[in-house]
Amino acid sequence: MIDISDKIKTILEQLPELPGIYKMIDQRGNIIYIGKSKSLKKRVKTYFADNPKWDKVNRMVRLIDNIEYVVTDTHLEAMLLECSLIKSIQPIFNSQMKNDKRYVYLKIEDFNRHNSLKVTSTREENSFGPFRNKYMLYDIMDSLKNLYPIIKSNDSYDFEYNLFPVSMNKEIFQENKKSLLHLFSDENNFDIFIKILNQKMQTESSLCNFESAIMYRNMIQNMEYLKTAINKYKIIMTSSIFITIPLKNGYKLFFISGGNIVLKEKLSETSEISDETKNDFIRRGMKSTENFLADMDEKSHMDYRDILYSEIINLPDEYKTVGTDLLIQ
Image 1 (cartoon, rainbow, N blue to C red):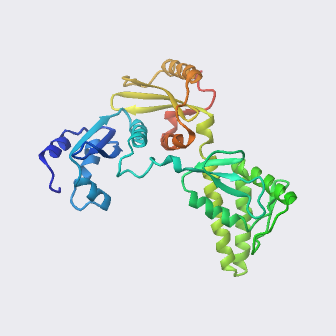
Image 2 (image 1 turned 120 degrees about the horizontal axis):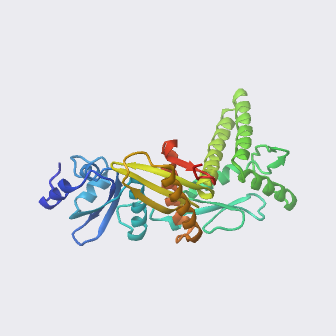
Image 3 (image 1 turned 45 degrees about the vertical axis):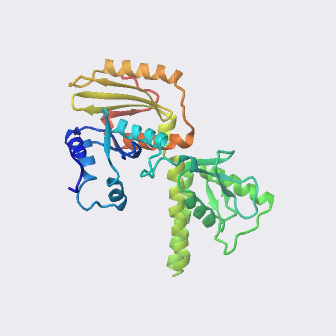
Protein backbone atom coordinates (compact mmCIF):
# COMPACT_ATOMS: atom_id res chain seq x y z
CA MET A 1 0.00 0.00 0.00
CA ILE A 2 1.08 3.60 -0.47
CA ASP A 3 2.31 5.65 2.48
CA ILE A 4 -0.77 6.65 4.49
CA SER A 5 -1.33 8.06 7.96
CA ASP A 6 -2.04 5.94 11.03
CA LYS A 7 -5.45 7.62 11.18
CA ILE A 8 -6.42 6.34 7.73
CA LYS A 9 -4.96 2.88 8.47
CA THR A 10 -7.17 2.63 11.56
CA ILE A 11 -10.25 3.65 9.59
CA LEU A 12 -9.50 1.09 6.87
CA GLU A 13 -9.25 -1.68 9.45
CA GLN A 14 -12.53 -0.63 11.08
CA LEU A 15 -14.53 -0.53 7.85
CA PRO A 16 -17.23 -3.24 7.75
CA GLU A 17 -17.71 -5.72 4.92
CA LEU A 18 -21.22 -4.38 4.39
CA PRO A 19 -22.96 -2.26 1.74
CA GLY A 20 -22.94 1.49 2.14
CA ILE A 21 -21.47 4.79 1.03
CA TYR A 22 -18.13 6.41 1.89
CA LYS A 23 -16.99 10.04 1.91
CA MET A 24 -13.40 11.05 1.26
CA ILE A 25 -12.59 14.22 3.24
CA ASP A 26 -9.61 16.61 2.95
CA GLN A 27 -7.78 18.52 5.72
CA ARG A 28 -10.23 21.41 5.52
CA GLY A 29 -13.19 19.13 6.12
CA ASN A 30 -14.39 19.28 2.52
CA ILE A 31 -15.99 16.14 1.09
CA ILE A 32 -14.01 15.64 -2.12
CA TYR A 33 -15.46 12.29 -3.24
CA ILE A 34 -18.46 10.07 -2.48
CA GLY A 35 -18.69 6.43 -3.50
CA LYS A 36 -20.72 3.32 -2.78
CA SER A 37 -19.99 -0.39 -2.53
CA LYS A 38 -21.45 -3.79 -1.67
CA SER A 39 -18.47 -4.15 0.69
CA LEU A 40 -17.10 -0.92 2.18
CA LYS A 41 -13.88 -2.51 3.45
CA LYS A 42 -12.93 -4.10 0.13
CA ARG A 43 -13.78 -1.07 -1.97
CA VAL A 44 -12.21 1.70 0.10
CA LYS A 45 -8.95 -0.23 0.52
CA THR A 46 -8.46 -0.27 -3.26
CA TYR A 47 -7.90 3.50 -3.28
CA PHE A 48 -4.74 3.07 -1.22
CA ALA A 49 -3.20 0.24 -3.23
CA ASP A 50 0.13 0.76 -5.00
CA ASN A 51 -0.04 2.15 -8.55
CA PRO A 52 -3.71 3.11 -8.73
CA LYS A 53 -5.27 2.47 -12.14
CA TRP A 54 -6.66 5.99 -12.56
CA ASP A 55 -4.68 9.24 -12.35
CA LYS A 56 -7.71 10.87 -10.69
CA VAL A 57 -7.45 8.37 -7.82
CA ASN A 58 -3.75 9.07 -7.44
CA ARG A 59 -4.41 12.81 -7.18
CA MET A 60 -7.34 12.36 -4.81
CA VAL A 61 -5.64 9.98 -2.37
CA ARG A 62 -2.94 12.54 -1.57
CA LEU A 63 -5.66 14.91 -0.31
CA ILE A 64 -7.57 12.43 1.89
CA ASP A 65 -7.35 13.24 5.59
CA ASN A 66 -10.44 11.40 6.83
CA ILE A 67 -13.04 8.86 5.68
CA GLU A 68 -16.63 8.72 6.84
CA TYR A 69 -19.12 6.04 5.91
CA VAL A 70 -22.77 5.06 6.24
CA VAL A 71 -23.86 1.42 6.29
CA THR A 72 -27.05 0.53 4.39
CA ASP A 73 -29.13 -2.64 4.36
CA THR A 74 -28.77 -3.14 0.61
CA HIS A 75 -26.56 -2.10 -2.27
CA LEU A 76 -29.65 -0.51 -3.88
CA GLU A 77 -29.99 1.88 -0.95
CA ALA A 78 -26.27 2.61 -1.09
CA MET A 79 -26.55 3.56 -4.77
CA LEU A 80 -29.56 5.80 -4.14
CA LEU A 81 -27.90 7.48 -1.15
CA GLU A 82 -24.70 8.04 -3.13
CA CYS A 83 -26.73 9.67 -5.90
CA SER A 84 -28.56 11.96 -3.46
CA LEU A 85 -25.37 13.05 -1.69
CA ILE A 86 -23.47 13.71 -4.91
CA LYS A 87 -26.27 15.96 -6.13
CA SER A 88 -26.47 17.92 -2.87
CA ILE A 89 -22.74 18.13 -1.98
CA GLN A 90 -21.19 18.25 -5.50
CA PRO A 91 -17.78 16.74 -4.55
CA ILE A 92 -14.95 17.92 -6.76
CA PHE A 93 -13.75 14.41 -7.75
CA ASN A 94 -17.21 13.06 -8.65
CA SER A 95 -18.17 13.53 -12.29
CA GLN A 96 -21.38 11.57 -12.74
CA MET A 97 -24.90 12.45 -11.51
CA LYS A 98 -24.09 15.95 -10.27
CA ASN A 99 -24.73 17.86 -13.51
CA ASP A 100 -28.33 16.86 -14.18
CA LYS A 101 -29.28 20.47 -15.01
CA ARG A 102 -27.35 19.96 -18.26
CA TYR A 103 -29.57 17.08 -19.38
CA VAL A 104 -31.60 17.91 -22.48
CA TYR A 105 -34.69 16.96 -24.48
CA LEU A 106 -35.23 16.10 -28.13
CA LYS A 107 -38.15 18.05 -29.58
CA ILE A 108 -40.04 17.50 -32.81
CA GLU A 109 -40.15 20.98 -34.35
CA ASP A 110 -43.32 22.87 -35.21
CA PHE A 111 -41.83 24.00 -38.51
CA ASN A 112 -38.32 23.96 -39.93
CA ARG A 113 -37.68 23.49 -43.63
CA HIS A 114 -34.56 21.33 -43.23
CA ASN A 115 -34.64 19.73 -39.80
CA SER A 116 -37.64 18.44 -37.89
CA LEU A 117 -35.75 18.00 -34.60
CA LYS A 118 -34.03 20.28 -32.13
CA VAL A 119 -32.39 20.01 -28.71
CA THR A 120 -34.01 21.94 -25.85
CA SER A 121 -33.06 22.44 -22.21
CA THR A 122 -36.67 22.23 -20.96
CA ARG A 123 -39.57 19.91 -21.71
CA GLU A 124 -41.84 21.30 -24.39
CA GLU A 125 -44.73 19.94 -26.43
CA ASN A 126 -43.72 16.90 -28.53
CA SER A 127 -40.39 16.51 -26.72
CA PHE A 128 -38.72 13.31 -25.52
CA GLY A 129 -36.16 12.65 -22.83
CA PRO A 130 -34.36 13.80 -20.83
CA PHE A 131 -31.05 12.66 -22.32
CA ARG A 132 -27.58 13.02 -20.83
CA ASN A 133 -25.62 13.28 -24.07
CA LYS A 134 -26.73 16.24 -26.18
CA TYR A 135 -23.88 15.67 -28.66
CA MET A 136 -25.29 12.24 -29.46
CA LEU A 137 -28.61 13.94 -30.20
CA TYR A 138 -26.91 16.39 -32.57
CA ASP A 139 -25.38 13.44 -34.47
CA ILE A 140 -28.81 11.82 -34.72
CA MET A 141 -30.37 15.07 -35.96
CA ASP A 142 -27.68 15.48 -38.60
CA SER A 143 -28.04 11.91 -39.88
CA LEU A 144 -31.84 12.05 -40.08
CA LYS A 145 -32.13 15.33 -41.97
CA ASN A 146 -30.91 13.65 -45.16
CA LEU A 147 -33.85 11.22 -44.96
CA TYR A 148 -36.62 13.82 -44.78
CA PRO A 149 -39.37 13.71 -45.75
CA ILE A 150 -40.26 10.49 -43.94
CA ILE A 151 -43.83 9.53 -44.83
CA LYS A 152 -45.88 7.05 -42.85
CA SER A 153 -47.39 4.49 -45.21
CA ASN A 154 -49.87 2.11 -43.56
CA ASP A 155 -47.71 0.37 -40.92
CA SER A 156 -44.41 1.27 -42.57
CA TYR A 157 -42.37 4.33 -43.60
CA ASP A 158 -41.32 5.63 -46.99
CA PHE A 159 -38.06 7.58 -47.27
CA GLU A 160 -34.90 7.85 -49.35
CA TYR A 161 -31.44 9.17 -48.61
CA ASN A 162 -30.90 12.62 -50.14
CA LEU A 163 -27.37 13.82 -50.80
CA PHE A 164 -28.48 17.28 -49.72
CA PRO A 165 -31.31 17.95 -47.24
CA VAL A 166 -34.67 18.53 -48.94
CA SER A 167 -36.37 21.85 -48.29
CA MET A 168 -39.84 20.97 -47.01
CA ASN A 169 -42.88 23.17 -47.42
CA LYS A 170 -45.42 23.29 -44.60
CA GLU A 171 -47.58 20.51 -46.00
CA ILE A 172 -44.70 18.09 -46.44
CA PHE A 173 -43.25 19.16 -43.10
CA GLN A 174 -46.50 18.27 -41.32
CA GLU A 175 -46.51 14.83 -42.94
CA ASN A 176 -42.93 14.34 -41.84
CA LYS A 177 -43.77 15.56 -38.32
CA LYS A 178 -46.70 13.15 -38.09
CA SER A 179 -44.40 10.29 -39.11
CA LEU A 180 -41.80 11.20 -36.47
CA LEU A 181 -44.46 11.45 -33.75
CA HIS A 182 -45.73 8.00 -34.74
CA LEU A 183 -42.18 6.62 -34.86
CA PHE A 184 -41.20 7.97 -31.43
CA SER A 185 -44.46 6.90 -29.78
CA ASP A 186 -43.75 3.15 -29.63
CA GLU A 187 -40.72 0.91 -29.70
CA ASN A 188 -42.44 -1.38 -32.24
CA ASN A 189 -42.47 1.55 -34.65
CA PHE A 190 -38.73 1.97 -34.09
CA ASP A 191 -38.28 -1.72 -34.95
CA ILE A 192 -40.12 -1.22 -38.25
CA PHE A 193 -38.00 1.83 -39.10
CA ILE A 194 -34.75 0.08 -38.15
CA LYS A 195 -35.74 -2.93 -40.29
CA ILE A 196 -36.13 -0.64 -43.32
CA LEU A 197 -32.75 0.97 -42.61
CA ASN A 198 -31.20 -2.47 -42.37
CA GLN A 199 -32.69 -3.51 -45.73
CA LYS A 200 -31.29 -0.37 -47.35
CA MET A 201 -27.89 -1.04 -45.77
CA GLN A 202 -27.87 -4.60 -47.16
CA THR A 203 -28.82 -3.33 -50.62
CA GLU A 204 -26.04 -0.74 -50.65
CA SER A 205 -23.55 -3.31 -49.41
CA SER A 206 -24.54 -5.80 -52.13
CA LEU A 207 -23.91 -3.05 -54.72
CA CYS A 208 -20.48 -2.40 -53.16
CA ASN A 209 -21.59 1.09 -52.12
CA PHE A 210 -19.78 0.69 -48.84
CA GLU A 211 -19.80 4.37 -47.89
CA SER A 212 -23.60 4.43 -48.13
CA ALA A 213 -23.82 1.12 -46.27
CA ILE A 214 -21.77 2.58 -43.41
CA MET A 215 -24.03 5.63 -43.36
CA TYR A 216 -27.10 3.39 -42.91
CA ARG A 217 -25.28 1.34 -40.28
CA ASN A 218 -24.62 4.51 -38.27
CA MET A 219 -28.28 5.50 -38.61
CA ILE A 220 -29.31 2.08 -37.28
CA GLN A 221 -27.08 2.58 -34.24
CA ASN A 222 -28.55 6.04 -33.68
CA MET A 223 -32.12 4.77 -33.88
CA GLU A 224 -31.36 1.88 -31.53
CA TYR A 225 -30.05 4.46 -29.06
CA LEU A 226 -33.21 6.57 -29.35
CA LYS A 227 -35.47 3.52 -29.10
CA THR A 228 -33.81 2.42 -25.87
CA ALA A 229 -33.58 5.90 -24.34
CA ILE A 230 -37.23 6.76 -25.02
CA ASN A 231 -38.85 3.41 -24.19
CA LYS A 232 -36.53 1.69 -21.72
CA TYR A 233 -38.15 3.03 -18.56
CA LYS A 234 -41.85 2.90 -19.47
CA ILE A 235 -42.58 -0.11 -17.27
CA ILE A 236 -40.84 1.29 -14.20
CA MET A 237 -42.54 4.67 -14.64
CA THR A 238 -46.07 3.35 -15.27
CA SER A 239 -46.25 0.21 -13.11
CA SER A 240 -46.40 -0.66 -9.45
CA ILE A 241 -43.49 -2.94 -8.58
CA PHE A 242 -42.86 -5.10 -5.50
CA ILE A 243 -39.31 -6.34 -4.93
CA THR A 244 -37.64 -8.40 -2.24
CA ILE A 245 -33.88 -8.27 -1.62
CA PRO A 246 -32.41 -11.03 0.55
CA LEU A 247 -30.16 -9.93 3.43
CA LYS A 248 -27.78 -11.91 5.61
CA ASN A 249 -30.43 -12.16 8.28
CA GLY A 250 -33.76 -11.47 6.64
CA TYR A 251 -35.17 -9.49 3.73
CA LYS A 252 -35.73 -5.90 2.60
CA LEU A 253 -39.05 -5.19 0.92
CA PHE A 254 -39.63 -2.28 -1.50
CA PHE A 255 -42.80 -0.96 -3.10
CA ILE A 256 -42.09 1.18 -6.17
CA SER A 257 -44.55 3.39 -8.02
CA GLY A 258 -43.91 6.00 -10.71
CA GLY A 259 -40.19 5.28 -10.54
CA ASN A 260 -40.07 6.10 -6.80
CA ILE A 261 -39.68 3.95 -3.70
CA VAL A 262 -42.84 4.81 -1.76
CA LEU A 263 -42.43 2.22 0.99
CA LYS A 264 -39.63 -0.01 2.28
CA GLU A 265 -39.36 -2.35 5.25
CA LYS A 266 -36.76 -4.65 6.76
CA LEU A 267 -37.84 -8.11 7.92
CA SER A 268 -35.75 -10.27 10.24
CA GLU A 269 -37.42 -13.48 9.05
CA THR A 270 -34.91 -16.07 7.92
CA SER A 271 -37.45 -18.44 6.38
CA GLU A 272 -39.54 -17.73 3.29
CA ILE A 273 -41.81 -14.69 3.64
CA SER A 274 -45.48 -15.65 3.95
CA ASP A 275 -48.06 -14.55 1.39
CA GLU A 276 -49.92 -12.79 4.19
CA THR A 277 -46.86 -10.68 5.03
CA LYS A 278 -46.29 -9.82 1.37
CA ASN A 279 -49.93 -8.85 0.82
CA ASP A 280 -49.97 -6.68 3.94
CA PHE A 281 -46.86 -4.82 2.72
CA ILE A 282 -48.27 -4.42 -0.81
CA ARG A 283 -51.54 -2.99 0.53
CA ARG A 284 -49.61 -0.47 2.62
CA GLY A 285 -47.48 0.36 -0.41
CA MET A 286 -50.57 1.05 -2.50
CA LYS A 287 -51.94 3.25 0.29
CA SER A 288 -48.63 5.13 0.54
CA THR A 289 -48.72 5.76 -3.21
CA GLU A 290 -51.92 7.77 -2.83
CA ASN A 291 -50.18 10.32 -0.59
CA PHE A 292 -46.69 10.20 -2.14
CA LEU A 293 -45.38 13.41 -3.65
CA ALA A 294 -42.16 13.33 -5.69
CA ASP A 295 -39.85 16.13 -4.54
CA MET A 296 -37.50 16.38 -7.54
CA ASP A 297 -37.70 17.40 -11.18
CA GLU A 298 -37.50 14.80 -13.91
CA LYS A 299 -33.87 15.60 -14.79
CA SER A 300 -32.74 14.79 -11.25
CA HIS A 301 -35.11 11.85 -11.13
CA MET A 302 -33.48 10.36 -14.23
CA ASP A 303 -30.43 9.18 -12.26
CA TYR A 304 -32.55 7.61 -9.50
CA ARG A 305 -34.71 5.96 -12.16
CA ASP A 306 -31.60 4.46 -13.79
CA ILE A 307 -30.48 2.98 -10.48
CA LEU A 308 -33.90 1.45 -9.78
CA TYR A 309 -34.18 0.11 -13.33
CA SER A 310 -30.74 -1.52 -13.16
CA GLU A 311 -31.58 -3.18 -9.82
CA ILE A 312 -34.99 -4.42 -10.95
CA ILE A 313 -33.81 -5.73 -14.32
CA ASN A 314 -30.97 -7.71 -12.71
CA LEU A 315 -33.02 -9.10 -9.82
CA PRO A 316 -34.07 -12.78 -10.22
CA ASP A 317 -37.73 -13.17 -11.20
CA GLU A 318 -38.67 -14.77 -7.88
CA TYR A 319 -37.75 -11.52 -6.09
CA LYS A 320 -39.84 -9.10 -8.19
CA THR A 321 -43.46 -8.66 -9.24
CA VAL A 322 -44.44 -6.05 -11.80
CA GLY A 323 -47.99 -5.00 -12.62
CA THR A 324 -51.26 -3.78 -11.21
CA ASP A 325 -52.41 -7.12 -9.78
CA LEU A 326 -49.67 -7.60 -7.19
CA LEU A 327 -51.66 -9.19 -4.39
CA ILE A 328 -51.07 -12.92 -3.94
CA GLN A 329 -54.28 -14.95 -4.12
